[in-house]
Amino acid sequence: MSTLPMTLSRRLRSSPFEKRVLEHGASAFTLYNKMVLPLIYESYEKEYEHLCHHVQIWDVACERQVEIVGPDALRLVELITPRDISTCAIGQCKYAPLCDENGGIINDPIVLRLAEDRFWLSIADSDVCLWVKGIAWGRGFDVRVFEPDVSPLAIQGPKADDLVADVVGEHARKIRFFRFTDETIAGTPVKLARSGWSGQGGFEIYLQDSAKGLDLWDVFWEAGRKYDLRPGAPNLIERVESGLKSYGSDMTIENNPFEASLEQYIDVDKKAEYMCRDVLVRVREEGPARRLVNLVIDGDDLPPMRSDWAVLDDDGKQVGIVTTKVWSPRFGTTTAFATIDAGHNAVGMRLRVDADGVIRTASVRDGKWQLGA
Image (tube, rainbow, N blue to C red; front, side, top):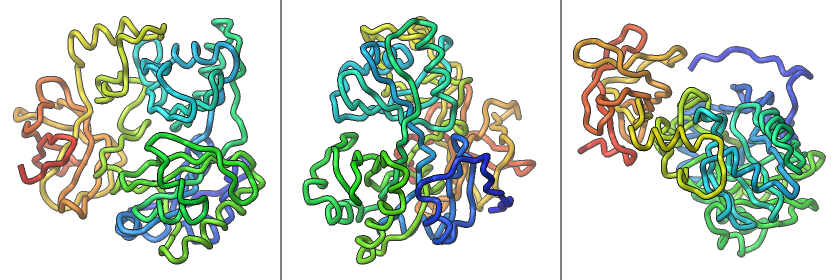
C-alpha cells in the first residue's frame, strides 16, 4: 500500500486519544469529519490477523455525534430518515440511513436514543450537523442541534467481552447488540454500546469529556495486557469480508437505500413523515436502476485502486464500477463491492473488471461470500 505524508496542523481537530495513537506508532492516516483517523500501525494484514483472534483498541473519535434535543426531536429525526425511529427505545441504537428529498443518502449513522426527546447521530464522514440544523430552522422545529463533546473509543475483537467485563463488570457481557448503558470509567461518565465497525464483535465507549481521553485509553490498555491488546483501526480487509459498507466509498448522495442494498434498514411505509417517501415508494415498485453487490475478482492480488474500476459485460460495455476491493486472506481471492446496473447484478452473474488496464473475470456473489458455490 502506498502512503502520502500528512501534516497534523491546528486546522485539523485533534482526538482526545491522539497522543497514545502516535506513541504506539500509527503509520498511516486518513481525514474523516475534519479529523485524523489512524488506519495502520504495522500493516493491514498483520492487524487483520490480530483483530480476528484477539482484541484491539481503536481511536474512532472522528465518528462525531450530532445531538438533537427538544420537544420536536423525534419528529426531526423521523423526517430525515426512512427508518422507523418511533420504535427505538431509550438505551437502544439503530442503523439509519439519512436521505434527502431525492432519496440520496446523506450519511448512514447509528442513531442512539438517550431520552424521549434526545438523540445522538453517530455519523460517517459528511457535514450532517449543518444539514440537520438547516432543516430544523426551515421547518421551525423546537429543537437544539449541535455537536456535543463526545468521542468514541472502540474495543473490538473476540476477546472484547473479557476485557470490557474486567474494566466495567460482568454485567457488560449481558449488553445486547445495539444497546448501551451508562457507566463510569476512569472517573468519568461514558455510554457503553455493544457496537463497532467490525464483524468481530465489541464495544464503543462514548467519552463525554475530552480531557479524560488519555485516562480512558490507559484504563483499557493496562487491563488488556493479559489479552494481548494492541492498538488498531477499522480494518479494510476485515470490513469487506464482513460486508460492512463505507459511506463515501461504497455509497454517496448519488445512491438511494435500495441501490445501496440497505432496504432491510428502512421502513418505506412508516407512519411518520419523512423527506423521500414518494421517491422510495417508486423505486420499490420499479426496482433500483443499479445495486451495490459483492464481487469476487479472479486471479492474483491487484494493485491498490485510486480511480474507479469499470465493470464490463461480455460485449465490453461498462455496466458498473468497483467501489472497494481488497485481497482476502480468508478466501484467497480479491473480494470487492461494486455498483452494477440492473440486469447485470444477479448472484452468479459473470462479468469482467478493468483494473486500470488489467482485465480480470469476476462474479457476483451473495452477502455470505459463498466462494465455493
